Amino acid sequence: MENKIVVIAGATATGKTDLAIQLAKKIDGEIVSADSMMVYKYMDIGTAKPTQQEQEGIRHYVIDVVEPSYNFSVKDFLKEADRSISEIQEKGKIPIVAGGTWLYIQALLYGLSEAPKGNPEIREELYKENNKKLYKKLKEVDKEYAQKIHQNDKRRIVRALEVFYETGKPFSSFQKEHSFKEKRYDFVGFILQRDREQIMKRIEERVEKMFQKGLIEEVKNLMEMGYENSLTAKQAIGYKEVIPYLKGEISLEEAKESIIKNTKVFAKRQIRTFRNKLEFDHITLSDYTNNKILDTIIERLQLQRR
Image 1 (cartoon, rainbow, N blue to C red):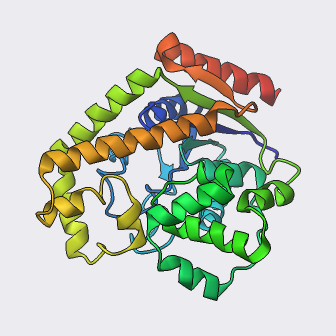
Image 2 (image 1 turned 30 degrees about the vertical axis):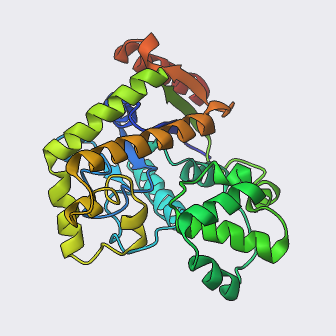
């Protein structure tokens, strides 16, 4: 709690990465990614991972840390992020946590919930069901948690249902009851916003650029490396839609349209998630110049560090 950290959150395609890099250059900071897909190696284009050139000399942490076949958990993220923040602070720099995965950000700032241990028999039966059916059931028994995760995130869906069937209580209730009463870090938080139409347009442009950069080849390489059937490949937007194209099951245009559609649905869910986070300042990017936004963040940080 001795040194503050800055948290920059928001929906996909709002411009978090670029703003975090510009802020880091101004305040001598380094960036801790809070993105559940950027942790995976070899998945660069489809996750909009910043290239070395785009990072502009600013070191990024919790990127490229595990193989695509590894089931990276919130607990894994917490361990990596805590270690990264300590390393940044030991250098005398300011940690800037940037990303759109609220489960990661929540765990980092407030701690992990202490849900009960799982039941292997229940888990095994649940994994036999398809994602759509499981997610529908989760929405019936725990709508609050269902809204926080992707409908194709089978591992988290199964975990939540497993807890519900074992205890009779929704998984979200354990998060509330057992979350830390005090913040784990003293932070200044900002949620970046854009007009919804603007975000949707930026998503369309981003997807088009992904294909231009070589998304097809990236997915093909992952398949050749044996990662097609990993949980990550199955749930990651931008990858699961291209696999059927490479198998000749759908057209390139259908793959593109599917990625755009799924990304827009994901963005809308993120927008709802971030809407009521009162402990964060909400900044609408279209209302200010980039320099004005940076000045606002720096001013707030300086005020709270006094």
